[in-house]
Amino acid sequence: MCGIFGIVTTNEQRLGPILTEAGYRLSYRGYDSVGIATIHADGNIDLRKDAGKVSQVAEKYNFNEMVGTRGILQLRWATFGEPSLVNSQPHLDSEGLMVGAHNGNVVNNVELRKQFMAEGMTVRSTNDGESCVHAVERYIRKGLSILEAIRHAYDDLEGDYAFVIGLAKDDKIYAFKKGSGLVVGIGNDFACISSDLPSILPLTRNIIFMNDGEIVELSAKSARLFRVIDGKPIDRPIEEVEDTMEAAQKGGFAHFMLKEINEQPKVAEELIHLWENSTDVEQVLAAMQQARSIYFIGCGTSYNACVAGTVYFNRLAGRSVFPVAAPQFTAQYNNAIGPEDVGIFVSQSGETKDVLNAVEIARKRGMRIFSLVNVVGSTLTKLSENWLPLTCGYEISVPATKTFTNQLVGFLYLAYRMGNIPTSPLLQIPQWMNEAIQSSQDQIPHILPHIKDWNDLYCLGYGLTYPIALEGALKLKEITYAHCEGMLSTEFKHGPLAAVTKGYPVIFTTTTADIPVIISGINEVTCRGGCAIAIGPKDERLDTNANYVISISQPTPEIASILSVIPLQLLSYHMSLSRGYDPDFPRNLSKTLTVD
Ligand code: M6R
Image 1 (cartoon, rainbow, N blue to C red):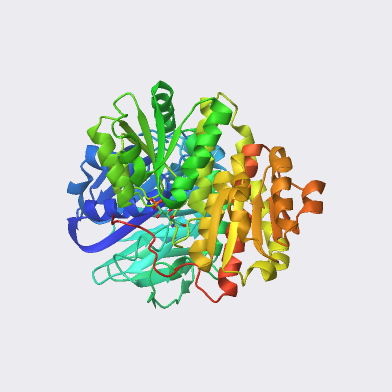
Image 2 (image 1 turned 120 degrees about the horizontal axis):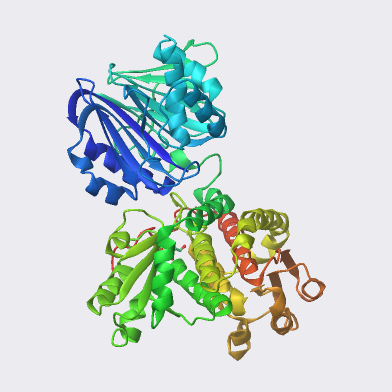
């Protein structure tokens, strides 16, 4: 993804802390490398950058002490050029007279680099961000003004990206947008620009949203916009963003939950891409391979993901893992663990107190602590020997959706690697997720009338889909306020079956291999007048036995299990709406639970 942030201030001051903070806020966008350039009032450029996460590079290069009147930060999610110091951004031009950084991809980077070298420029890296700087330099060398040079560079640079640049002998910074997000913030004595709005909101709520094909010239007191096509100024008023960052991020969807469900294919793709080249993944895998015992520890949705992870590890890597609800960790294991064991702590927020309490116990016993976390820079990341990012960006909606599926994708990825299985099938997950969203949208209108008024229902799974049933039931409970119990389908006949009356809804999730056992469960419900809704493969046995079916692709049993949570998320969402509730902010709940 990559992220950029730039700032111009009236007086020279310590910009390092401001830029580093912005880096933390943007770090969900990439952390292969990070860099800051500050430009002093006298035009000196201080450039510090390296491969690594914000916290590591900031400490190593003492970002905190960096001063200037202008500053640029970049976080990189590597595409062009390996993650390394030389490929880190920002980049200088040939003579060190300007500095710039981009996010996105310049697709003709390789050809451009050859051209720049042939034209006598100093090209230091293979990174496409550097090509953006040289593309401007090319026209500055020809005597054009900075604005004219940017207009020409825009045409030369193919792809989707946003770019920010500052000249040493100037008092402004400039940016242009071509496909990637770019937002301007105006403060009392500064102006700033960023890849996303939330990273600006802590500084100012006075915002200008940029469109593709626009250039902005930022001084400490103003932001002037120009059209790339003809250089004409654009008159766009500053908007005061009244709402919290949530409103700025709904992206056209009615609710964050719906947006986040629809983001699942994209964030899954990003996770696989990032983990594929990650040395952190190697370290976590090595620790797990050497471990005497492995524990997956989390709460709520994250705990359900831990249960799924243990099934993947058993099936694909032949490795047993203990899934634990974090508050039970002490009761069940504290006298059994030691330095030979590995705990993988799973948390969207990285701040859940129940999880941090378990970490504390594990630390005291010398256990090795690793984590899967969505919020970069959270407490859990700091307490972990190493951690792997869930790469979901902000998850605003209280019901976890995209972080759950990426927890599953992450566990599945690790299980494939531990089992020495090629990970290439995982690359198709986004496409199958899209199909699952579509097939859910087609079927849910037929199913909803039969469940929406029930205040009591069950969600059952078996084997691979048992944790999916737990998660589906949690989603239904959380946002419809109906009681929904998730359980192993075969346990239903041992007691809960007594609840079934005419029309009583029971949702079943299954993969192909488990259809026979699920069919038994379905018939135990339907023969008593209950309503059986099946989520599983397109299969005649399900069609003939269940009242309603949502069909899910079955590329592999494990991937199918991940896909089968999507209909449950969407069913919960629509049932919540049908009851007049706000699925994003269900009563009594909080996204991050920092209390016992
Ligand atoms: O931030 P965490 O993943 O540690 O949060 C744990 C639970 O509070 C959380 O998963 C909760 O169950 C979900 N918001 C439910 O959708």
